[in-house]
Image (cartoon, rainbow, N blue to C red):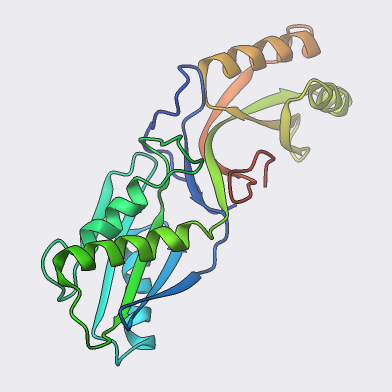
Length: 250
């Protein structure tokens, strides 16, 4: 799991669902090449968490392909995709970076089921080796868009979900029992600290009102009303996925 962020509140289609968005499941780069009228378009997709990381990927591609004429790029960042950048890198204005960005933003994780706040934390760099045939503005738009889209079709995707984290103070004598009973009820116990005068259980749930209410009821039942939940903040967690999405925690 990569370090989480707490900003943003993207819609995922359900009023009581935890905020979530799509990410590349693999942390390493994904490369794919297509050829259009003798020009080579080499796309790299990579997961990033900051603008600095995205620009570092772009710089690396320039260094790796010094003889290429263009290294066009686009990236989106954050749970609400507040950061969106694109660059034509010498191609006619609007023919490269913009269609690349649109390919990222409009990508459908399931055919026919688009999401307005889905894929994020990703940079795309398309390196072009000119093949001697001019493509025209429309041809360039289609080529750069397809280069990114074709690579996205090869990508494994995951869902990144906001989790609310709570502490539950417990007597040492009953901490193990409480932990076992909570796990049996389906509560995610991420750890138990026995170092203090009392033990502290850490619990993580989807960050939604319904989940918080359910957790409070479960804790009250398990502890006979003796347990008090302490909010510890929010973290983002990757849920495992395949090419069409994953469902089990990573």
